[in-house]
Length: 501
Image (cartoon, rainbow, N blue to C red):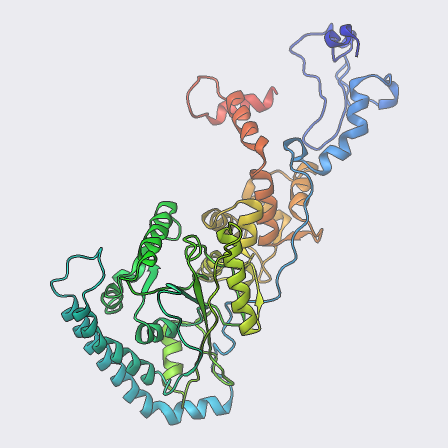
């Protein structure tokens, strides 16, 4: 480009000669182009202009630009990942169906009452025994004295009786726990509330648990005797402190072995979801353990079923089957510096292979999304599963942000199939029905069906918001609207800025 081109006016001199206050229409909100002439007529035919006129450039590229209204921010088109056909949270027998099940419940009701009494008695005795073992013990930083550990055998035996009351009269075991000095950390798949009770009796380990467990009646006191490591899964500082505690307690032989459920939530046992990395960051050998619940009529997994209903179904079974298998120890690679992600992946693969199930990218975040959708009275909350582990890695979107997007999506009033039509989309964002609005909706509607799902809305929104230029564009727009230099703008300032931009 010649030097004089840098100073050439964008509008022709005859247009420049008119009043500077008269607007020149270049592009309107509907994507229609045109230049106003001196008589106020707009939308001239582009063929009437010379080929080097700026309006010719706009005419030749308007459709390409406006097909993606966010291309100026660097948000190019994207492909929506395929959704998994596996639902790791579904309990297949949440409803009591079939004559056999109803007859069995009727027959077992008297037995269920006896089991309930046994459960309450064992829980009470175990609670009293734990309180006695913990009485006067203030030094929680060091291991529990051996004489107190011996007193905890009362509670451990009570826990086995609790399993008996739930119908686990015998439990099949395969393999043996590795010595603590070889594998100080044990990880297991998590299907029900039964596994923590079993491992409490079997290993009496130190566990890593959510802070919310401490306030649970009876249970909070008992797990404190296990010198539990509390963690807030949504607090980076809490997770860091938990990892440091895991490293400290796994480094010596004074503490019991540590037990973690790296999935972070219960599943139905037919898939292994993404692992949290807390057990693998310290880099100590790990023994995987798998738990199965073979069944025909009653799925014992704690999925989309209430705790009370699950306990009732367990009490009204003749017998509940449970199998525990201790797998070979997984050692960190010594010939290379193995990161926690790879170490967790090898352990996860070993567990999935032993269970003969698939690995998915679901996480605890998906469970939270489903729970929120269920609380909002959605007919099929499972439609809002998006495989959060995949989203966190590809879009760097955390669970809280995804929950915020779900709030917005639910405000658009999705239909029973989880779809939102364009009119509800525009109503929520207060957009006028026009070509540009349709293209904004079309950007999210990747599958071009005229309606969007929550997954499309989440991916499309995150794809734009995570662009480096997005924040700069917002700051520039905010600065352009503000007139008094403060940190907020009024509706009048926005209206004035838009009207004369």
